[in-house]
Image (cartoon, rainbow, N blue to C red; front, side, top):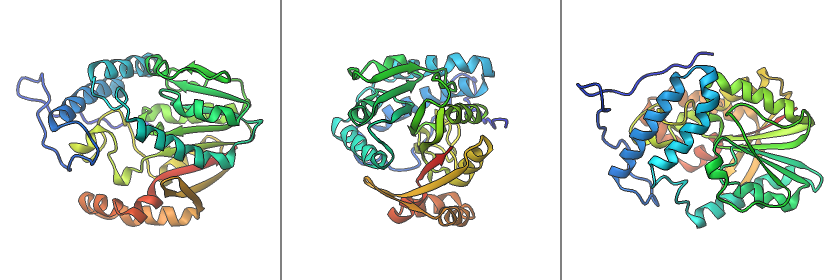
Length: 300
């Protein structure tokens, strides 16, 4: 698969991206103003462009370098100033979803662990946790738990023994991978799972995106969401690397239930036929959003 890359529009001197107006209102609870959002957007798009255009061997280094650079250059980035209430609520909801899959004997692996707060929250419920991320800088921000091992990745590698993980989990990760790297990481996750192990993947649906900072300015993700997926696209990719069964979940606010795949895929087909403004408006309606949020359990 080859990435489709459209460069940012450039000014006459070919040095600075042209300014863009906000396309959607600033989200409720967003503490930053329009100038800060635009600064974040321009820096993130600049760094993401480097990753999109990099050769495969270069990307192994750049995933770590560019994310660390983003957090340094954008001091008001949400990851530098996380809302303690919002973060705690998100972790509680993830734990509620994960609880049905975890056992005291489980080895749990979080890919894209960030500050490792979720991994540390899960740790008392399982035998062992492996927290994987590309940014050493951000993984240092939460004190370690005794049974949590922190592992630095190059963006696609899953440096654990084959068949050693019972439950793998990622939340808002797949969309950050270069399209040419996504299948490789999925193959590595599949390899890491024990027979019958499950990979729980949460990612924003392309049909209501973009969901990175570029959503304020663009119709297609142009920041560090290098590719956003529909449920149908992600399911095809997972099957191609060997996952035998897929189960979709729908819901919100910590409550999730399995739903028939044809219901999710049918809703996607219907929305895909609409114009972008209409699609985004409908996708923002709570029941549609609850159905479309890509939350899939891929079983080995």
